Structures are given as C-alpha cells and as structure tokens.
Image (cartoon, rainbow, N blue to C red; front, side, top):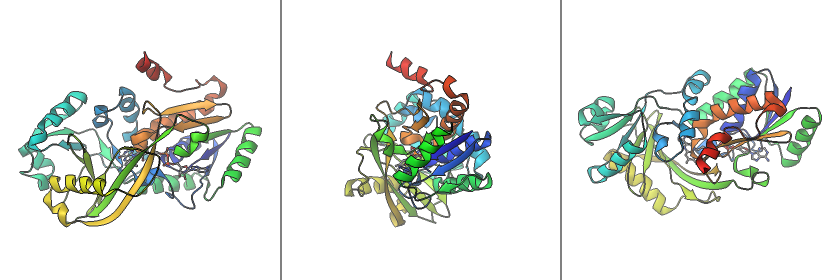
Length: 343
Ligand SMILES: Cc1cc2nc3c(=O)[nH]c(=O)nc-3n(C[C@H](O)[C@H](O)[C@H](O)COP(=O)(O)OP(=O)(O)OC[C@H]3O[C@@H](n4cnc5c(N)ncnc54)[C@H](O)[C@@H]3O)c2cc1C
C-alpha cells in the first residue's frame, strides 16, 4: 500500500509516522521550503491538556486527547509530564470556581501547595487547580523529532512541493491504488468549505530569573492567558482567539493583554526580553471538533483547532485505520459524538 501525505504540520507528520509504522510506503509533500514554514503548528504552545480543555470543549476532545500523552512520550523524549496549573487573582476567584465546575481530574491547591509545586509563585496565589495528568512539549522540537523519525523509517519529506506537483503525485498514487492523506490545515478549504480560521497571537520571552516547570493558565473574565516553559529561561505566552483567517501582525491590544497577564503572574516578566512575536491561524470546523473524513481516494484530517498537538496522535491512528480498512471504513470517524451533540 502506498500513501501520499500532503502537509508537514503536526497532523501530517503524525499521520506519516502512524502509517509508516504499519508498513505503508509513505511520502510527505510539503509546500513550505522547510519544516515549520507557513505552518500553524510552528506557533503552538505545546500544551497537552485534555482535562483543562474540557472547560470549553466537548468530551470527545478529552477522550481523543488522552491518547496523546503516551504517544508523545513514546515518540518525543522531550515530552514533559508534570501536569499543569490554573490560577486566578483574588478578584477573579469566580473564574477559578467556574473552571473547576467545567473540568475534571484536578486537585485543589492552597498557597502552600502551589509554592511546593512552583516555588517562584510562592505567596502570589492562595488557590489553584492542579491537573497532574497533563503535559507539555516544545512544538518545534517535537516536529523536528517526528521528521527525524520519518527519516529513520525511510519516509521522504519533499519540501517546496507546489500545487501542480501535489496534484500529479496525488493522481498517480490514486491511479496505482494508493491513498492520499490531506493534512493541509486551513488550505484545505477548497475541499472542506466549512473550515474557518481562528487567529492566535503569541509571544516568546526570555526570563532566566523565573523558573516555572509546567504550563500555568492565568484566568481572567476577558483574556485568559497561559505561559508555557520552553526551557533555558524561555516562555511562550499565548494565545488570543480571534475569528479571522488572516495571519496579520499582532495588535497592540493583544500584546498588552498577553504581557499584562504574564506580569500579573509574576512581576519579573516586566523585565523579560521579547524574543519572538508570532501569529498563526488555527483550522476549525463550525463545531470546533476535529474530523477524519474519507472522500473518494482521499482521507482528510483537519479541524484540529486549538488542539493540534493534543489530538494529532489519536487522529493519526484513526486515519491509519481508515486507510487500512479502505472502503470498509466509516466516511467520517467519530461521527457518533458529533451526531449525539447535534441531537
Ligand atoms: C498561538 C497558537 C497556540 C496554540 N497552542 C496549542 C497548544 O498549546 N496545544 C495544542 O495542541 N494546539 C495548539 N494550537 C493549535 C495547533 O497549532 C493547530 O491545531 C495545529 O497546528 C494544526 O495542525 P495542522 O497540521 O492541521 O495544520 P498546519 O500546522 O497549518 O499544517 C499544514 C501544513 O500543510 C502545508 N500545506 C498547505 N497547503 C499545501 C499544499 N497545497 N501542498 C503541500 N503542503 C501544503 C502547510 O505549509 C503546512 O505546513 C495553537 C495554535 C496557535 C495559533
């Protein structure tokens, strides 16, 4: 069996790893000239937070997301499994209570336990929620590790593949009985017209004076922000959620809000060096749930929204099962949960 994967974001690379692991001859075609070029996955925070995400998503995201922690730990040694922390300032205590009501699998911490987990937050918060089963990773290092894994498995990643080259390879593969896995993210709107873009803005700062060892979410009624440690004194601060498919530059308001939240978490962030400012556009379906969908000789893996790293392992497994089951696979995987939701 031969498969062409289009797109070397987290969805495409995870699909290629899963297919190659099942003995399929895979080739990856990527439009960008290098890993991460023009790819939403390069901008991600890298939180693997199935239980925190329950706050604003369907149970399906947590169910699929639970597969990601062992998968990432097995495929990327940089996966950090230290849980995540959710805090709110005194005036936003109601936000923390609501977050607790909408999520599960957390421990409620007092100030002493917060300080034990994150000594640099000692004395700053009197309450927090701790999600011990969650994890995080550096998305760029993780993508590089998947690309290296593919190299070791003999799977080529062809960068700079233009639309014409993709079309020719796709038709040739399908004519020979092979299959195409379309992981083009937002660019797949030509085939999946209900895809939309949700812009996210982020910053990377360097602050060697503060040490945080797990992602911290700072709740706020208007601007919830998270801070993810990247190692070596670097932190990713993210992320806005703006209904837009334009990856335009960060606005002054977003910059103020992201930095304000970081400063409120710890005033030392006021001294941080700004290393990077980035914007990415998340591919999302109207219900914000992912979809693995077979249309003719193509399997589309898309709609990863704000959960690309969290969901890619489970979606890649489903896509691989779909490829190997051929005509016997359902046209839309996990359609049941979608229908239950609509009922
Ligand atoms: C600021 C921000 C923070 C985020 N934080 C998190 C987080 O903490 N945890 C998490 O799980 N998720 C997070 N996400 C979401 C995550 O980044 C996305 O869900 C994920 O990147 C989507 O991956 P993808 O592979 O579907 O798309 P992409 O990463 O966009 O990959 C698509 C690839 O297809 C290529 N392509 C497009 N058209 C063609 C073509 N015609 N031919 C060949 N190649 C083509 C593109 O160049 C690109 O490389 C975040 C997103 C943003 C923006």
